[in-house]
Length: 307
Image 1 (tube, rainbow, N blue to C red):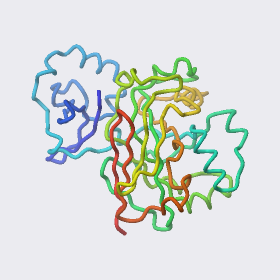
Image 2: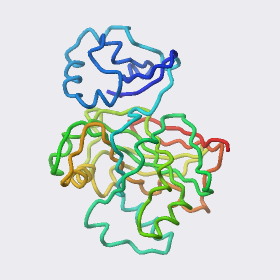
Image 3: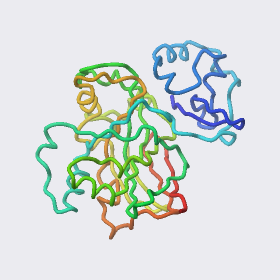
Image 4: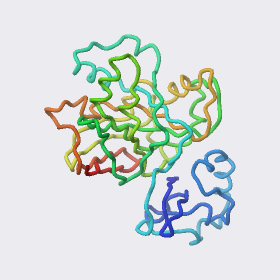
Protein backbone atom coordinates (compact mmCIF):
# COMPACT_ATOMS: atom_id res chain seq x y z
CA UNK A 1 0.00 0.00 0.00
CA UNK A 2 0.96 3.62 -0.46
CA UNK A 3 0.22 5.68 2.64
CA UNK A 4 -0.26 9.44 2.50
CA UNK A 5 -1.12 12.47 4.59
CA UNK A 6 -3.27 15.10 2.92
CA UNK A 7 -5.18 18.30 3.54
CA UNK A 8 -8.85 18.34 2.56
CA UNK A 9 -10.83 21.28 1.23
CA UNK A 10 -12.17 22.02 4.71
CA UNK A 11 -8.61 22.47 5.98
CA UNK A 12 -8.48 19.27 8.01
CA UNK A 13 -5.38 17.09 7.69
CA UNK A 14 -5.85 13.34 7.58
CA UNK A 15 -3.80 10.22 6.95
CA UNK A 16 -4.82 7.51 4.52
CA UNK A 17 -3.73 5.69 1.41
CA UNK A 18 -3.82 5.96 -2.36
CA UNK A 19 -6.55 4.13 -4.24
CA UNK A 20 -5.92 3.30 -7.90
CA UNK A 21 -3.29 6.08 -8.00
CA UNK A 22 -6.18 8.56 -8.47
CA UNK A 23 -7.85 8.89 -5.10
CA UNK A 24 -6.95 9.69 -1.51
CA UNK A 25 -8.73 7.62 1.14
CA UNK A 26 -9.23 9.16 4.59
CA UNK A 27 -8.49 6.15 6.81
CA UNK A 28 -10.45 7.54 9.77
CA UNK A 29 -13.54 8.41 7.76
CA UNK A 30 -13.50 5.25 5.62
CA UNK A 31 -13.38 2.97 8.68
CA UNK A 32 -15.94 4.88 10.77
CA UNK A 33 -13.26 5.91 13.23
CA UNK A 34 -11.58 2.52 13.70
CA UNK A 35 -8.35 3.82 12.19
CA UNK A 36 -6.79 7.04 13.54
CA UNK A 37 -6.56 10.46 11.92
CA UNK A 38 -2.75 10.70 11.78
CA UNK A 39 0.01 8.61 10.26
CA UNK A 40 1.99 8.64 13.49
CA UNK A 41 -0.94 7.18 15.45
CA UNK A 42 -1.39 4.56 12.71
CA UNK A 43 2.27 3.52 12.91
CA UNK A 44 2.11 3.13 16.68
CA UNK A 45 -0.36 0.27 16.24
CA UNK A 46 0.04 -0.53 12.56
CA UNK A 47 0.12 -4.33 12.89
CA UNK A 48 -3.42 -4.34 14.29
CA UNK A 49 -4.61 -1.72 11.78
CA UNK A 50 -3.08 -3.53 8.79
CA UNK A 51 -4.76 -6.75 9.87
CA UNK A 52 -8.06 -4.88 10.11
CA UNK A 53 -7.58 -3.49 6.59
CA UNK A 54 -6.74 -6.88 5.10
CA UNK A 55 -9.78 -8.53 6.72
CA UNK A 56 -12.31 -5.77 6.05
CA UNK A 57 -13.97 -6.65 2.75
CA UNK A 58 -16.26 -3.61 2.98
CA UNK A 59 -13.35 -1.22 2.36
CA UNK A 60 -12.71 -2.60 -1.11
CA UNK A 61 -15.91 -1.17 -2.56
CA UNK A 62 -16.81 1.75 -0.33
CA UNK A 63 -16.74 5.34 -1.54
CA UNK A 64 -16.82 6.73 1.98
CA UNK A 65 -13.85 8.97 2.74
CA UNK A 66 -12.60 8.78 -0.85
CA UNK A 67 -11.42 11.99 -2.53
CA UNK A 68 -9.98 12.74 -5.94
CA UNK A 69 -6.33 13.75 -5.74
CA UNK A 70 -7.34 16.98 -7.48
CA UNK A 71 -9.46 17.82 -4.40
CA UNK A 72 -6.71 17.45 -1.82
CA UNK A 73 -3.19 18.72 -1.12
CA UNK A 74 -0.57 16.09 -0.36
CA UNK A 75 1.58 16.75 2.70
CA UNK A 76 4.66 14.88 3.88
CA UNK A 77 3.39 11.31 4.43
CA UNK A 78 4.75 11.36 7.99
CA UNK A 79 4.75 15.09 8.85
CA UNK A 80 5.88 14.59 12.44
CA UNK A 81 8.35 11.72 12.79
CA UNK A 82 9.45 11.04 16.35
CA UNK A 83 13.07 11.47 15.30
CA UNK A 84 15.17 11.70 12.16
CA UNK A 85 18.57 10.03 11.92
CA UNK A 86 20.43 10.53 8.64
CA UNK A 87 23.21 8.08 7.77
CA UNK A 88 26.17 8.29 5.38
CA UNK A 89 25.76 4.92 3.68
CA UNK A 90 26.72 5.31 0.00
CA UNK A 91 30.47 4.84 -0.53
CA UNK A 92 30.62 6.65 -3.89
CA UNK A 93 29.12 9.82 -2.40
CA UNK A 94 31.53 9.83 0.53
CA UNK A 95 34.59 9.20 -1.66
CA UNK A 96 33.71 11.79 -4.32
CA UNK A 97 32.59 14.50 -1.92
CA UNK A 98 35.81 14.14 0.07
CA UNK A 99 37.97 14.04 -3.06
CA UNK A 100 36.38 17.28 -4.24
CA UNK A 101 37.62 18.86 -1.02
CA UNK A 102 41.13 17.38 -1.46
CA UNK A 103 40.58 14.71 1.20
CA UNK A 104 41.29 10.99 1.14
CA UNK A 105 38.68 8.43 2.08
CA UNK A 106 38.52 8.12 5.87
CA UNK A 107 39.32 4.49 6.90
CA UNK A 108 37.02 4.63 9.93
CA UNK A 109 34.01 5.00 7.62
CA UNK A 110 34.31 1.29 6.87
CA UNK A 111 34.17 0.36 10.55
CA UNK A 112 30.65 1.52 11.44
CA UNK A 113 27.66 3.19 9.77
CA UNK A 114 27.56 6.74 11.13
CA UNK A 115 24.67 9.18 11.36
CA UNK A 116 23.62 12.54 12.73
CA UNK A 117 20.31 13.69 14.17
CA UNK A 118 18.52 16.28 12.06
CA UNK A 119 15.50 18.45 12.80
CA UNK A 120 12.41 16.23 12.82
CA UNK A 121 10.24 19.35 13.24
CA UNK A 122 11.11 20.87 9.85
CA UNK A 123 9.69 18.19 7.56
CA UNK A 124 8.30 19.46 4.24
CA UNK A 125 6.01 17.71 1.77
CA UNK A 126 5.52 17.42 -2.00
CA UNK A 127 5.35 20.74 -3.87
CA UNK A 128 6.03 22.70 -0.69
CA UNK A 129 8.33 25.67 -1.19
CA UNK A 130 11.77 25.54 0.42
CA UNK A 131 13.21 28.76 1.83
CA UNK A 132 16.94 29.23 1.49
CA UNK A 133 18.53 30.17 4.85
CA UNK A 134 19.13 33.91 4.98
CA UNK A 135 22.89 33.55 5.53
CA UNK A 136 23.46 30.98 2.78
CA UNK A 137 24.24 31.21 -0.91
CA UNK A 138 25.23 27.55 -1.47
CA UNK A 139 21.91 25.72 -1.35
CA UNK A 140 21.99 22.06 -2.38
CA UNK A 141 19.65 19.08 -2.68
CA UNK A 142 20.46 15.52 -1.57
CA UNK A 143 18.88 12.49 -3.24
CA UNK A 144 18.14 9.91 -0.54
CA UNK A 145 15.76 7.16 0.49
CA UNK A 146 14.24 6.91 3.97
CA UNK A 147 12.84 4.00 5.92
CA UNK A 148 10.07 4.40 8.47
CA UNK A 149 10.26 2.37 11.67
CA UNK A 150 7.08 0.45 12.47
CA UNK A 151 8.00 -1.58 15.54
CA UNK A 152 9.68 -0.86 18.88
CA UNK A 153 13.02 -2.52 19.52
CA UNK A 154 16.38 -2.27 21.20
CA UNK A 155 19.74 -3.85 20.34
CA UNK A 156 18.26 -5.13 17.08
CA UNK A 157 20.47 -7.43 15.03
CA UNK A 158 20.84 -6.63 11.34
CA UNK A 159 19.55 -10.11 10.50
CA UNK A 160 16.27 -9.29 12.26
CA UNK A 161 15.94 -5.61 11.33
CA UNK A 162 13.62 -6.03 8.34
CA UNK A 163 10.69 -6.82 10.63
CA UNK A 164 11.07 -3.37 12.24
CA UNK A 165 10.66 -1.51 8.93
CA UNK A 166 7.16 -0.35 7.95
CA UNK A 167 8.03 1.15 4.58
CA UNK A 168 10.13 3.52 2.49
CA UNK A 169 9.85 6.96 0.91
CA UNK A 170 11.89 9.52 -1.02
CA UNK A 171 13.91 11.97 1.08
CA UNK A 172 15.56 15.27 0.11
CA UNK A 173 18.04 16.38 2.76
CA UNK A 174 18.36 20.06 1.83
CA UNK A 175 21.80 21.46 2.65
CA UNK A 176 23.25 24.93 3.07
CA UNK A 177 26.78 23.99 2.07
CA UNK A 178 28.51 27.24 3.04
CA UNK A 179 27.07 27.08 6.55
CA UNK A 180 27.80 23.36 6.76
CA UNK A 181 31.43 23.77 5.66
CA UNK A 182 32.15 26.39 8.29
CA UNK A 183 30.54 24.55 11.20
CA UNK A 184 32.13 21.20 10.35
CA UNK A 185 35.61 22.73 10.52
CA UNK A 186 35.02 22.79 14.26
CA UNK A 187 34.61 18.99 14.18
CA UNK A 188 30.93 18.83 15.06
CA UNK A 189 27.92 18.80 12.81
CA UNK A 190 26.26 19.13 10.39
CA UNK A 191 23.56 21.04 12.22
CA UNK A 192 22.60 24.55 11.08
CA UNK A 193 23.56 23.60 7.55
CA UNK A 194 20.76 21.02 7.58
CA UNK A 195 18.05 21.86 10.09
CA UNK A 196 15.95 24.28 8.02
CA UNK A 197 14.17 21.72 5.82
CA UNK A 198 13.91 18.04 4.91
CA UNK A 199 11.40 16.96 2.24
CA UNK A 200 9.72 13.55 2.11
CA UNK A 201 7.03 11.98 -0.01
CA UNK A 202 4.89 11.74 -1.95
CA UNK A 203 3.92 8.60 -0.01
CA UNK A 204 5.29 5.77 2.13
CA UNK A 205 5.38 2.47 0.26
CA UNK A 206 5.01 -0.60 2.47
CA UNK A 207 7.95 -2.97 2.12
CA UNK A 208 5.84 -5.84 0.74
CA UNK A 209 5.30 -3.82 -2.46
CA UNK A 210 9.06 -3.77 -3.04
CA UNK A 211 9.72 -7.47 -2.52
CA UNK A 212 10.13 -8.26 -6.22
CA UNK A 213 12.97 -5.69 -6.40
CA UNK A 214 14.91 -7.11 -3.44
CA UNK A 215 18.67 -7.61 -3.81
CA UNK A 216 21.30 -8.49 -1.24
CA UNK A 217 21.77 -5.02 0.21
CA UNK A 218 18.27 -3.64 -0.22
CA UNK A 219 16.33 -3.09 -3.44
CA UNK A 220 17.06 -2.48 -7.11
CA UNK A 221 15.47 0.97 -7.33
CA UNK A 222 16.83 3.58 -9.79
CA UNK A 223 17.27 7.05 -8.28
CA UNK A 224 17.41 10.32 -10.24
CA UNK A 225 17.42 14.05 -9.57
CA UNK A 226 16.54 16.86 -11.96
CA UNK A 227 16.83 20.62 -11.55
CA UNK A 228 14.50 22.66 -13.77
CA UNK A 229 13.97 19.53 -15.88
CA UNK A 230 17.67 18.82 -16.45
CA UNK A 231 18.88 15.41 -15.27
CA UNK A 232 21.85 15.81 -12.90
CA UNK A 233 21.96 12.75 -10.67
CA UNK A 234 21.60 9.03 -11.41
CA UNK A 235 22.10 6.17 -8.98
CA UNK A 236 20.50 3.06 -7.56
CA UNK A 237 19.54 2.06 -4.03
CA UNK A 238 21.24 -1.33 -4.57
CA UNK A 239 24.62 0.45 -4.60
CA UNK A 240 24.30 1.25 -0.91
CA UNK A 241 27.29 0.08 1.17
CA UNK A 242 25.56 -0.15 4.54
CA UNK A 243 22.07 -1.68 4.36
CA UNK A 244 19.15 -0.24 6.30
CA UNK A 245 19.39 -3.37 8.43
CA UNK A 246 22.93 -2.42 9.47
CA UNK A 247 21.80 1.17 10.07
CA UNK A 248 18.99 -0.03 12.34
CA UNK A 249 21.40 -2.27 14.23
CA UNK A 250 23.66 0.73 14.81
CA UNK A 251 20.82 3.11 15.70
CA UNK A 252 19.30 0.67 18.21
CA UNK A 253 22.54 -0.23 19.96
CA UNK A 254 21.77 0.49 23.61
CA UNK A 255 18.79 2.62 22.53
CA UNK A 256 15.11 1.91 21.99
CA UNK A 257 13.82 2.81 18.53
CA UNK A 258 10.09 3.39 18.21
CA UNK A 259 7.36 3.35 15.58
CA UNK A 260 7.33 6.65 13.71
CA UNK A 261 11.08 7.25 13.72
CA UNK A 262 12.68 7.97 10.35
CA UNK A 263 16.09 6.86 9.08
CA UNK A 264 17.74 8.38 6.02
CA UNK A 265 20.24 6.60 3.78
CA UNK A 266 22.52 9.50 3.09
CA UNK A 267 23.13 10.71 -0.45
CA UNK A 268 23.36 8.26 -3.34
CA UNK A 269 26.43 8.56 -5.54
CA UNK A 270 26.23 11.72 -7.73
CA UNK A 271 23.15 12.76 -5.75
CA UNK A 272 24.00 16.40 -4.95
CA UNK A 273 25.70 19.47 -6.39
CA UNK A 274 28.50 19.27 -3.81
CA UNK A 275 29.52 15.96 -5.34
CA UNK A 276 28.91 16.89 -8.98
CA UNK A 277 30.73 20.20 -8.71
CA UNK A 278 29.53 23.70 -9.58
CA UNK A 279 31.05 23.34 -13.04
CA UNK A 280 28.22 20.84 -13.67
CA UNK A 281 25.53 22.97 -12.03
CA UNK A 282 25.48 26.13 -9.92
CA UNK A 283 24.07 26.15 -6.39
CA UNK A 284 20.29 26.31 -6.21
CA UNK A 285 18.60 29.69 -6.59
CA UNK A 286 15.09 31.01 -5.84
CA UNK A 287 12.63 29.73 -8.44
CA UNK A 288 14.52 26.49 -9.15
CA UNK A 289 12.47 23.29 -9.12
CA UNK A 290 14.10 20.10 -7.83
CA UNK A 291 12.55 16.78 -8.81
CA UNK A 292 13.66 13.55 -7.14
CA UNK A 293 12.44 10.20 -8.46
CA UNK A 294 13.01 6.71 -7.08
CA UNK A 295 11.64 3.62 -8.79
CA UNK A 296 8.32 2.51 -7.26
CA UNK A 297 8.51 5.30 -4.64
CA UNK A 298 7.22 8.07 -6.88
CA UNK A 299 8.35 11.62 -7.60
CA UNK A 300 9.06 14.34 -5.04
CA UNK A 301 9.10 17.93 -6.32
CA UNK A 302 9.92 21.15 -4.48
CA UNK A 303 10.54 24.70 -5.63
CA UNK A 304 12.97 27.13 -3.99
CA UNK A 305 10.98 30.06 -2.63
CA UNK A 306 11.53 33.59 -3.88
CA UNK A 307 13.30 35.76 -1.35
